[in-house]
Amino acid sequence: MMKRRASWAVSFALLMVVAGCSSSGGSAGEGADSTPTPGGTYTLLGTYDPTSLDPIKQSALNGSLGSGGDYMAGLYDMLGYVDPKSGKVVAKTAKSITTTDGLTWTITLNSGITFSDGTPYDAAAVAFNLERERKPGTAQAQTFSTISRIAVVDPLNVRLTLKTPNSLFDRILVSAAPFVASPDAVKAAGAKYGTVGTKIVGAGAFVLDKWTPDSELSFSKNPKYWDAPHPYVEHYVYRIITDEQTRFNAFASGEGDATFSLEHDFGAQAVDAGEKQLTAPKLSTEWMILNETTAPFNDPRVRKAVNMAIDPQQFNSVMYQGKGTIARTFLTKNHPDYDPNARLLGYDKGGAQSLFDEAAATLGGPVRFRLMCAPGVCAKAEAIQSLLAGYRNVQATVDVRPAADNFPAVARGDYEVAIFSQTMPASFEPLVSTYWRSGQARVAQGDHPAVDAAIDQARGALDENQREAAYRTLQEAMVSGSHVWFLPVVPPASSVAVANRVHGARLLVFGISPEEVWVDH
Image 1: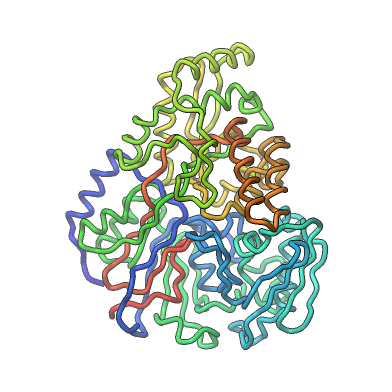
Image 2 (image 1 turned 45 degrees about the horizontal axis):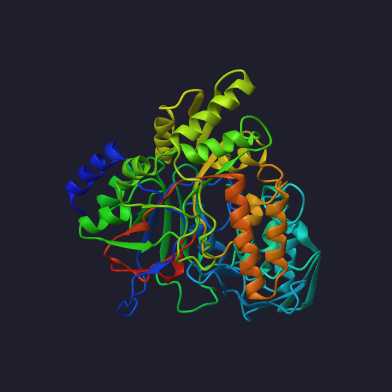
């Protein structure tokens, strides 16, 4: 890899002093490239250090940048994915995922697919994996508790029967359980499957050669991959660098071919240095999870106060150098389910202060809460803490946790505010069912029946107009009840820095799918 301008690293260091730039899902491509050249190595510099490569241990949905979806897709491939622009499902190893009534779903697979160990990627393998996904204690057990029966119809067809109709189940399936592991490999390793030292087998474009925790995952081309001529590169490396500046400097010096940040605009910096970026506009403001099961956010006054307390002009300046857009509604006009009536409470310093004072009088002291974030992505928490310092009777602390512990901490209720830099993609599912619905095992939130009813109405609607009406009701119920903390600024577009030698890259909601990439070498 060629050396890149040293001044770039200096400019990033200056940018770090000023602020950062949020990034989550998105979709973008580079446009037409010339004929792919096979061979070479593609290196992605990422942040997430996995504890397991077992699909059932993945606590983050395959729907957010930095969640590990890129290397998991390279290893396992995907049944399908949600197109970030349309919100519709794009089938991949599955030929189709269909229903006529929302209650019975059929997964039809492409023929001729095998796992890298030579065993068949068939209906029995998919059923085996889905049975594992819905067992108690797995990351997606709550999500798939809605399935009443899984049946193998023939080698290429699996029939799923749900407990209640859900016209959006295909979106949930490909977001929460897109990865299928070899049943033989899982049975051989038992409960240890997916950990360092076990044989980890998928049907993806790459096979795992070496896994060095806290360092990197190394893959090589899968000669049995079903979707020729992919992959183009011979080797794929995912290097783990959690520190923002160190990761950026590594990319700037040519040690990686692509990288991203949940806090800083790496893509714009890449363009400034003569490299490329992939971008995708955000479709909503960001929202943060509030634990409504305990103080202080079991008090609606506190939830309302924080939603009124952040000055959007200051937040936009500190976090995004003024490049964000002040939000009046939860969704932007470009979102398929935009509702002009889902208006945010808006900045009201006096109103917020009154509510903090009232809540403090009830609590017998200041309103206190932790802003939980992962290392390297806490600039947002620090900005919020700084802006809240101008109020009486509220004390926010930044709670830095290991990235792998953030979702488990939420599931066990060990948090007050969880910051995942989450915006709403084109499809509401599965995020609303996972994060907004009452009683979710993975998200200790609270009880909001109006929200639950709207989610159920949307899931059960086969008519698009009925679904849109339900989503309008859902948005308005979330905003009026302040059930999450809506930040009052739509972040700038997601961006990923990409080296000029990289071609064919597309930005999906979870990152870049590596089998389409080819490199100059």
